[in-house]
Image (cartoon, rainbow, N blue to C red; front, side, top):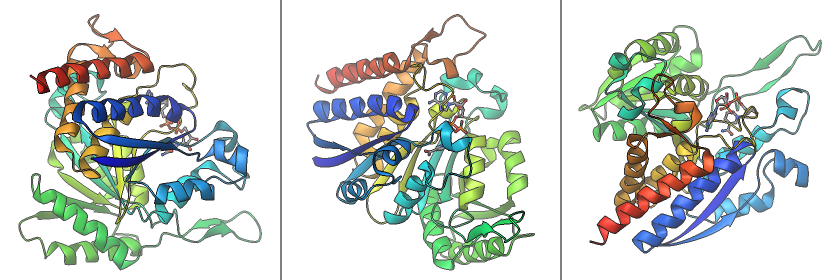
Length: 365
Ligand code: NAD
């Protein structure tokens, strides 16, 4: 198969982890006889420094003309420490989602058995947890009207949802539930927010078209508690942009680390694949970032955008085999055992490539 992939490393550890993700794509192309053509583009702080724009037109043109995008992260301490700066890296990310019509963010939360002890949650509570989040990406407080009132001491960000935005992501969540354990938990704050009442009303309406799926509703505060107390009680979670942002970071602890969680953003055209973590200024340049979230994003890309199930499963197996062999980056190391072999970012990528080589030998037997 011939495919065009744009690599969008972004800032901080985005560059470090995406380098390893790209190597995995190259190896899969070689082993399975595909032709992947790569292009690279800038976004975020780097793009602001060189063009004054967080998402330059040239980048956007490349993104609109490819089959899939592998993205790292954006962000830089300069902006985090100075909220008055008007051009900001995350504007590039929000604009990219809007321009590419990426309205659904899928975040699978699944714990590799080998990492049961790496989580701060008890293994008995976690074992078997397998959640698929659908976070809406183009509405909510991120895109509603925002500003300051004249006196400068009052600020507002309006939470806005339109019925069609809720309908299209609800369909995606119900359809995914059909391939899983047939349950959707819709998370909102309908006891106080009008936009949440529209959310709940719309999800109930769409749910009628999926009588084989069990639909339940939870308030976001209660859902946040149940995620940690009873993670196995969730199958598909459907929620808005803000609540999804917070809950999926919380849920990353189920998977052991932010460095283990991949995501896919999809709409009607090209798909964007990225780790859920940010640019992690605290570890940038140290070579210790966990590249597995980027590599797991590659597995999602192969499956969702290219329909390459076998290739995707081969990547997942390589990650699982690498963990089984005791290899860890520092963030997922178990302090209670001496059996872990701690690797840096690049060596972890190399281990995955070695496991892929072993898989390719058995494929060709
Ligand atoms: P972060 O996700 O970058 O880091 C949170 C913590 O997790 C840090 O201690 C970091 O060292 C650790 N961590 C994250 N990824 C890791 C990995 N792969 N391996 C090992 N440890 C990892 O979140 P933050 O610190 O709140 O934000 C840093 C910057 O990233 C900010 O500028 C923020 O705006 C930006 N950000 C960008 C995105 C994105 O581009 N999608 C998402 C979140 C935050």
